[in-house]
Length: 166
Length: 289
Ligand SMILES: Cc1cc2nc3c(=O)[nH]c(=O)nc-3n(C[C@H](O)[C@H](O)[C@H](O)COP(=O)(O)OP(=O)(O)OC[C@H]3O[C@@H](n4cnc5c(N)ncnc54)[C@H](O)[C@@H]3O)c2cc1C
Ligand code: FES
Ligand code: FES
Image (cartoon, rainbow over all chains, first blue to last red; front, side, top):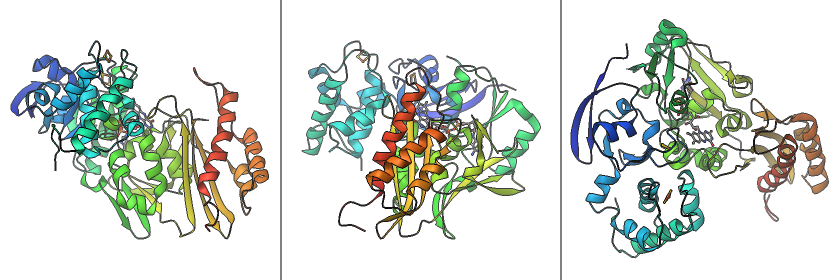
């Protein structure tokens, strides 16, 4: 009954096909099956946001998505987004503003911030705080994170680095 | 936290989902967005042997205005409701509430119907459904029936849904032109389940409030309609004395239980705070009618 299921998804541009157990969540699939350990698992019940990845252009919790549910989907992780340079401006700003210390939360925060700035580069500090409310950071106290995201929003509005879809 | 082993099937129709529910009984669970179910499986609160993925069922999708109703398909995601121009135009209550439903990444997957079916006592959509006089469309693929939201929530996580039924859609009557809505909640962290929340509706006609709905969540096992507070406000101008009378009524009709963070007395106090705030944003400012 709990037989393995064949899934086929595109991860960071690479097509991959695997037989997997239905109970395997996408975070474990990425980390254990594909060796992509940039996606972190904190709470594994949807609260911390460390496991955030992009599925079909939308951020999701990889711990609350079954890998079998991502069959046929386009998945992007921090590895793919870093390699393509899509987050370069955010990554630079996080570094510059000390918006990370241990880095456990960082991949999730970068992807979450990028999703906001793509849709609303004009987001103000209150909006940024609402949007990242689902991402725990136990080190920074968030202030520096908001600084960094706000700075990049400003850069992107004035046509600086980084990219915008649409 | 790893889920126990289970089998997984995708279905394309309500009838197919219902048939699997009948065949497997308590061993089967529907999965829509999975944003509640997968968390509880990780905690091993239950160990179903089969998950039935209903996301591909076409008849349960979409948001539309038809026959005097705003129809929200059960599979519409929180984010679809949040961004819907139809919802903003016809039922702004839901647009006001949507940003409070969990966090962005969870709203991208969690569904409207899933939230109503799960019936968390601190969830936004069940209270909004009651406040806006919604009816739920339930079906086993052969027979479908309609249940008023006010009659659907029976107790803590208990609903009128039968074991082989699905919620297929939620139907909101289109509000008349005087109908106004307000929404307010208090939570420890934006996007978390509410400590106390309030969905309000009412007709504002020539400076008087008519047919109000005052529906709290987070203060009992189900959404709670504060009928005595409504009666205190109905037909009046919602001036401070009337409002205080309505707030005083809350003590008799809400019996919240305290939790780890908030005592019952604090919750009751906060319910009054929310009523004052909510009524203030419900009624138009000076000079408007
Ligand atoms: C960290 C976190 C914070 C959250 N905060 C909030 C919040 O503040 N407010 C809030 O309202 N919710 C919150 N949620 C829950 C979220 O909104 C869920 O998306 C929602 O409650 C369930 O919807 P789902 O589609 O994900 O359902 P699922 O998890 O797929 O299913 C939940 C239950 O409903 C049943 N079900 C699903 N769809 C149907 C249907 N159409 N017919 C019959 N039964 C069905 C399933 O069998 C299951 O038992 C939070 C979740 C997390 C992880
Ligand atoms: S690991 Fe997914 S939200 Fe914490
Ligand atoms: S940098 Fe350590 S948790 Fe955020």
